[in-house]
Image 1 (tube, rainbow, N blue to C red):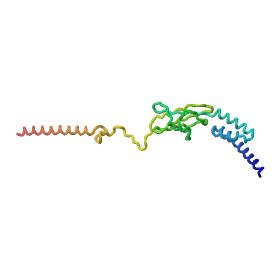
Image 2 (cartoon, rainbow, N blue to C red):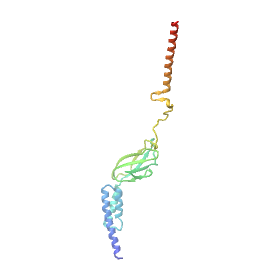
Image 3 (cartoon, rainbow, N blue to C red):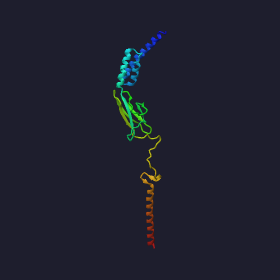
Image 4 (cartoon, rainbow, N blue to C red):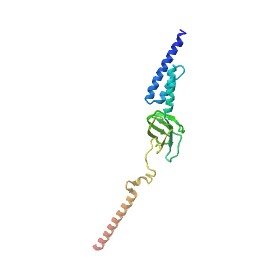
Amino acid sequence: VLLASPAARAGDSKAECVSASEQGQQLRDDGKYLRAREQFQACSRPVCPRVVSSLCTQWAHELDENTPTLVVGARDAQGVDVVDAHATLDGATLVDRLDGKPVAVDPGPHLLRVTREGNAPAEQKIVVRAGERSRVVTLTFVGSEAPVGAGTTTPGAGALGPDTGAHGSSGVGRVLTTGVLGVVALGAIASGIYLGLHST
């Protein structure tokens, strides 16, 4: 049993190496470069058969040359660079802080999104090409994120109190009404005087 155990372990390692090499090739062909590289690293170990290890080492080197990288940046509404922003790619965290360093990504279409406290999120659809190195993508925050429950009241609205209507101040309406009533009263008085004079 003791003599058979190392042989069994060696057989298991060989099977694992072959499986990793096959999965790595499939992931590479599917454009999943980052996961493919992990598999190629696994099958390039010294415990793997020499032929498999040699091929996996070569494939991992080729992926290193072809894996694209992004440098994500962000600016505020005034065009000033910001670093306190969180970036995601297709919903998964890319970087927690924008430090200007390149980050390896898979080739293909992606949705890049950056978020920052106090700003509305900014996002952009991009297509990353194999072999594209240190591509700079800069997004701009264009608005503020409104607090929960915030209204849309215009500053200064209602400052005149309930007397202000849609077509002007109701106080002005009262002034006009009073003026009209005064004119009517004066007319009535004048008519009374005229009738009184002629009745005598």
